[in-house]
Amino acid sequence: MSEPATVVIVGAGLAGGRAAEALRQQGYSGRVVLVGEEAERPYERPPLSKERLRGEKGGNELYLRPESYYAEQRIELRLGTRVERIDAPVHRALLSDGSALSYDRLLIATGSTVCRLRVPGAELPGLHYLRTLRDADALAKELASRPKVLMVGAGFIGCEVAASARALGCRVTMIDVATPLAAAIGERLGQWIVSMHRDHGVDVRVGVGVVSLRGAERVEAALLTNGEEVPCDLVVIGVGVTPNVPVVEGATLDVQDGIVVDEQCRTSVADLYAAGDVANWPHPAWGGRLRVEHFDHAQNHGVWAARCMLGATEPYAPVPFFWSDQYDRSIQYVGHAPRWSDLVLRASPESGSFSAFYLMGGRLQACLAVNRFKDLSAAKRLLRTRPAIDRALLSDESVDLKRLPVHSA
Image (cartoon, rainbow, N blue to C red; front, top):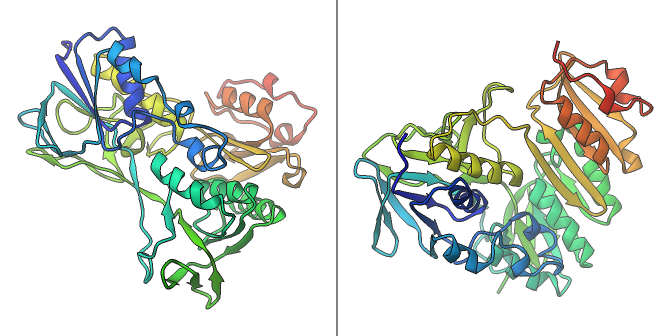
């Protein structure tokens, strides 16, 4: 594969930002253009629902690199600009400012877009979505007055926002049609999440959604599907995201829950690559396809895409990892377990420090560790081969997990 003269990266988030850095770190000397719809240079999103909301982290602490870095590395930033469409046959990206960029290879790292709540009253002032730095700052400004907060959605963002709002002294009601985080960590531990938030003063209501919102000049209350009405001064919506797939003309881009790519981040269209939240990729070890919406994957996949655009051929095969900080709990998850036949607990969840191991057919698939960093480290080592393990060894706290064999047979 010859070195491209110009690489265009569409999306200046974590995946795009790390890809641009990696191109230079790999010795690429051609033109790099990083196009971002936000006015901000690449920054980290995880603090938006935590430290940024609580006023503990300033803007400069979120950015991946100082502003001067991009000029020094000859990375052209086209911020506040959207790619309207990609003309694949002629290798050209058409931008919202009327200009066009020709490319030899193009990386789609457009991330995802928040799902909107579509009920009567959803246009009222006082409704917030959290995806960008601007979103976080607008929400933080309102939280400072300690309002009554309704959190709609109890996924990772919802739980983190609820915890941050409580830390600021707000009254918080959190609702969801399902048990919080149960889709990822199971019903048993989802109920533990419910108890943890209730113990910190959150009014958690499970199995209900929003029928409508009402208010005069701004939102004042929400009518729920069970007929109850919840007074509130502001509403935060966290009901999921969808992959942000750009328009590609002149070629068929395979899209199935995100942009389908191979193990080298290549799409179905020549010289188009995709990475991060927007990409649906095959994992050679776990089997099947994954689309992951977490920090660790976004930055690693962006780096991998950069290497592949320069000719690398190794498959992308990480051990998936994500984390969530809520109150004084560091919740970390490693592996991938869409299904499991056995859940093994190491200590009681009610103790505040425990691990949970997800097994399928006796083989380790994933581990959830709460304030248990050594267990997580040991599990990550084991998950490289996903060995068969006696469940009694996992549950016995006297057993040193680091000493368990890693072979798969």
